Image (tube, rainbow over all chains, first blue to last red; front, side, top):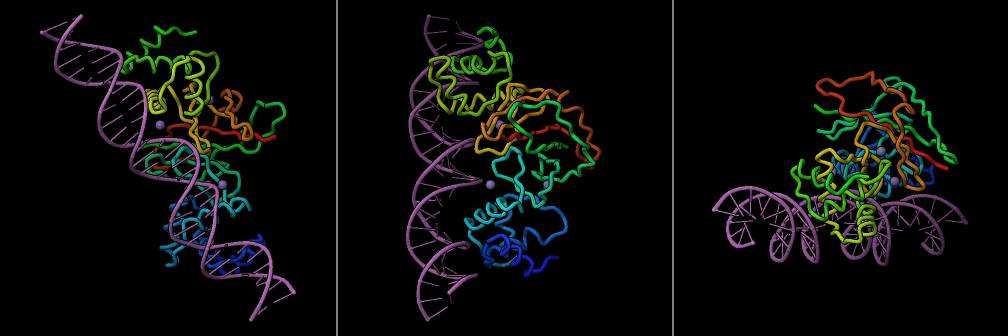
Length: 136
Length: 136
DNA sequence: ATCTTCTTTAGAATAATTATAAACAACGAA
DNA sequence: TTCGTTGTTTATAATTATTCTAAAGAAGAT
Ligand SMILES: [Mn+2]
Ligand SMILES: [Mn+2]
Ligand SMILES: [Zn+2]
Ligand SMILES: [Zn+2]
């Protein structure tokens, strides 16, 4: 349980004005126990449902991009018509349930360390992500 | 070097009529030494350039989807505004050069076997793919 | 309170992809 | 080879996720 005040501070510290809309979005995104995987459309609907207040779709996009830029959200590479985001910004891997279209976190110890034995001159590794697709 | 006749047979065997357009697309896709990573727009332009014959964009989409369904192309999960495909349909991993927006194949031995230590009841693993993002 | 700067918003614009439906080409049987 | 059938191509329209625009509104500083 994170308090509204903490969200306000977090936003202020990030040079983002703590507006009603951003605070509502924070509640939906960060007031939870487990990692949250979502699309913009998921988030848009949840804000309405959980806070009772309507936020424009443009603001959801703006806020998600702002949070992404600040490092509070991670973008997850899957092939889908919609972009997926993740409140777990640490380096970690995923199951993707193709039928349910749901992401599930994998702990690093569930996958083990991955050593990349090849390198490209002039380039360095930015991230290593494993995506495990699941079927029935 | 694969001959036109082989493409025609391949198409027939797949219950796809060997049209001029499909054969041209085959030439661009499969008449090469190395794996080919591409977007629909890449392919559309290359068909014009390499064969001198114009193919409609809709046909490129149709054909790519048909080949994908038949298992001749693989879709690569990266976050981009465009979908990437791959002529290497075996299970394999990738570098993605974020700046150049280019995919590079990784051999399985460059990554090593990946053992997934977690399972989800009722689901089985369909694929395990590693995406290594590269920066300068 | 006033001014400035940032934010929200509705709506328009963009861009990838998919759908539509008419013209066309491949096929198989006469 | 012709003819009828079925599959394919194509231009174009529709759809959909995302981004842009510009005006109205809210937050912060003085
Ligand atoms: Mn982003
Ligand atoms: Mn596809
Ligand atoms: Zn996650
Ligand atoms: Zn590849």
